[in-house]
Amino acid sequence: MSDSIHAPRQTPFVCEKMPATGSRGMVVTNHPLASAAGAQMLLAGGNAVDAAVAALFALTVVEPMMVGVLGGGLSHIRLADGRHQVIDNLSTAPRRATADMYDCLSDEIGRQRDVRDRENVVGAKAIGIPGALRGWCEALERFGTLPLADVIAPAIALAARGFIVTPYLSNCIADTAADLATDAGLAALLLPGGQPLAAGARLVQADYAESLRLIAAEGPQALYAGALGTALADCMAARGGLIDTADLAGYRTERREPIRGSYRGYEIIGPPPPSSSGVHIAQMLNILEGFDIGALGFGSPDAIHLLAEALKIAFADRAAATADPAFVKVPVARLIDKAYAAERRALIAMDEARIWSAGVIGGESADTTHITVADAAGNVVSATQTLNGLFGACVQVPGTGMIANNYMFNFDPHPGRALSIAPGKRVFTSMAPMMAVKDGRLAFALGLPGALRIFPSALQAIVNLIDHGMSLQEAVEAPRVWTEGGVLEIEDAVPDAVAQDLAARGHRIVRSPRIAGGMNAIAFNPEGTLTGAACWRADGTPVAISGGLARAGARFSI
Image 1 (spheres, rainbow, N blue to C red):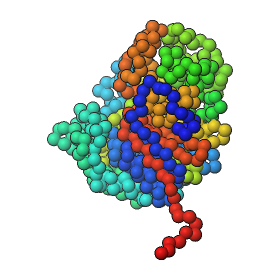
Image 2 (cartoon, rainbow, N blue to C red):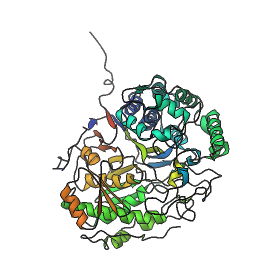
Image 3 (cartoon, one colour):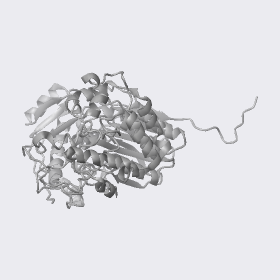
Image 4 (tube, rainbow, N blue to C red):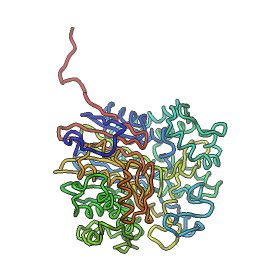
């Protein structure tokens, strides 16, 4: 798969963005200034990990609604020698958290996480122990080549000097204005005069610049055993939160081996539990492998019906069995077994939408960001990081500019379940920093934000690339579908005739202007070039690097 070896097929949609192609590096993030920060590291001689960490720090400034040093996430790293490593820096529940800490309001599908006063969404009780900063610094220390001070410098400059607010950021502020107004610091920063910061305005974050300077000087200890951690703990104590300095000092990342599946000659590689993506993408691809998806045609009623049924099967199993493996026995081998997929596939009816229950026994967040980075040596990073909801818990730690996550929303607030709260338990996630290998060579890497819709959307992009022969740009921009609770959401670009056919099979159709967030991806072309693509659903921008240093022995003469 790549833009260079597939002529684009006829598709029922038009791409809004153009891909970029380079030979010596590629950085694709959901903001142009973050892509520039990552590219700056590659141009300075750094590798993909240096570039990825620089881009993530820059995103905490220019995408403050999505990602922050008080957030968490997953980094899927492929080293030049072909080894894969997943760094899990997801948030964990505080030591004082309990399974019954919230007053639950409903157990209906789609409302299981509703609690009184939205305490798991907004405010101090919604905040989990942050893992982002430790995870990024660990990745840099283990696999990077540049010092932290160099990597964080672009973010410090953006925070101190400011940047121009995009319409996307302005809209996010407006959408969250009521919750932002409950925090004095965020209200002053983002709601000047009580109005959302307008597109075109300059956003300066002086306090946050100072926090970044402290991190540059002290490393992650600035948060986990230093002044920034003390400030966070004091904020929690004052506002009824649960995190204290002992929680911060005790936080650790997890290094995990990825999940590996196979699909039509490709090895599909993704993160393991507590992420659901690697397991359930492998499971769904195993189910779909029994059908000639390419022959059905992209966007056909049959193709969408099969996607919807595979999604429902995976989500039924996910709810029953996939969680933090330190607390719940996850039947990974069974879930990714092709024989199990055949059992489930045999129950699919092409003319009828089914209600699925779990086939195994086992004991999220709308707002995230994703980056995909590759260097000339063959190092690749696919990383998804988040504050969880828009602007997280809508809590800014006074004097630091740091915005806290609302990761506690990812737990099931009802006791006695796989996803219930327990002290030290890692949050469950749908993050899908995925990679695919063909004949021993990396073919593509991709990911996106979008809560529960993340890994179903990543699945669809993989199918678009492998089955439908799409270009990379087409694959990330193609219309998406999603299903939960008997409702099949379809993006507006899906034709009405297709929607009517699906409705006749029993799918309850709901139109959606956007399913999940801005996907970005890199394709690794056979001739050695890289293609980067980002979709219309965010401010995604690929920055490609070509050229290089002068030929060895070259001299200037007149």
